[in-house]
Structure formats: C-alpha cells, structure tokens
Length: 258
Image 1 (cartoon, rainbow, N blue to C red):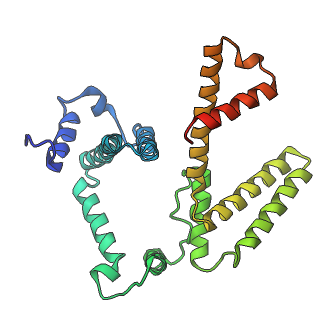
Image 2: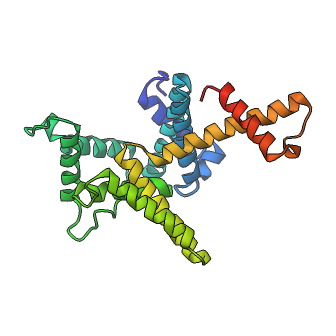
Image 3: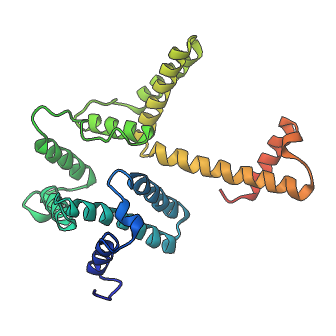
C-alpha cells in the first residue's frame, strides 16, 4: 500500500482495505442506508467548525466528511454500480459544462449573471417534464428546503418586486396566526409565517437555517452561563422568579461575547 498519508490514492486504498473480507467487521457490515446518519452528522460537524472559525477542526471534520463519500463510493464499486473515479469524472464534467464563462466562450460580468446562467444550464439539463423543484431533496431541513425552492422560483421571475411587499405578507400571516382557532389552522398558519420569514431572509441574503442554528447556539451558551452562575452562588435556577431569571439572562448577554 502506498504510504504517503496525504495521497488520495492512499486514502482510497485504506477504505477498500477496511471493506475487504479480512478487513474491519464494522466497516464490512455497512450499507448505503446504514451510514446515511453519519453523512448528515459529519456535515453538521463541518458547519460547527465553520461557526467556531476553528481551522484545525475544520480540516479534521472535512476529512471525516470525505471518508463518508469514499465509503459510499467503495460500497457502490463493490456492487459494480460506480467508483470514486466516476464520481470525480461526473463533478469535473459538470463544473466545466456549467462554467462556460470560464472554460468556454461565454462571458459573465458579475455573480448575478453567473447565477442566472447556472439556473438556465440546469434547466436545459432537466428532463422535459421535470419540475424546476424536482431536484431539491425533500429530506433537507425544512427551512433550507423552503429557501431552495423559493430561490429556484425566483430564478424564473416568480418573486416579489419589492422587499416591503414581503414584510407586508409576513405581517398578514402573523395576523392569521392570531385568528386561527383549530389546531390544524394553527399548524397551517405557523407554516405560512415561517415560509414568509424565509422569503424575507432570502431577500436580505440571510440563510434562515444558519441564522436559527446560530441563535440556538447563543441561547445554549447563555443558558449554560445562567446554570453555572447559579451553581457558583449556591442557588437553584428553577427556584428563581421569572424576573430574576431574566436578570440573570441579561447578565449572561453582557458577559458573553455573542
């Protein structure tokens, strides 16, 4: 086996060895379906490393994510479906095809032009009867899925003309939440609020999935601060009044960086 640990071929051979008859029993037992959760988990760990701006951790987590890709490719190779070389060939060909302004004669003056050309090329690649939205994975987190389908619809002009119209729509949807009486109506109206909020965020260049993830992290850090402060002071957070808890929350906000 090639010994250079920085070589892609070495990593490919390591994964194949793990899957060999005399390899690792755990790796040999895995299937495309069984390792799906790990692919998602590793992707989120990459996002966390990015949020923390930890480059060493980012390098490590990208390696873990790459391992999942290689495992799927090795399982497919064993089943005579495709290999990692097919994966590489496919994405290389697609990148060249979808960047004619770099590899061909087309011209693009700015990022907006590139995005429009990208969507047009993707549309030309679709089957005649395919929906514009059909290739958006329905298994995505709901906020991300909403962002993606709205962006695709906007790409062909189905979008608000002004940001104020979106805010008016959001206000309208919040009013309808207040007016909802049955549980089914509440589910429907809260969904409409979230959909309108995703649209408003998209117009401002904000990925709402990321924004909420960061808000969750801020809440967690501040709440942990409150718990630790109570332990140091020999009091129970549970026994504090709501006003006292809020005062502790404000303390956490002022003492933590963000």
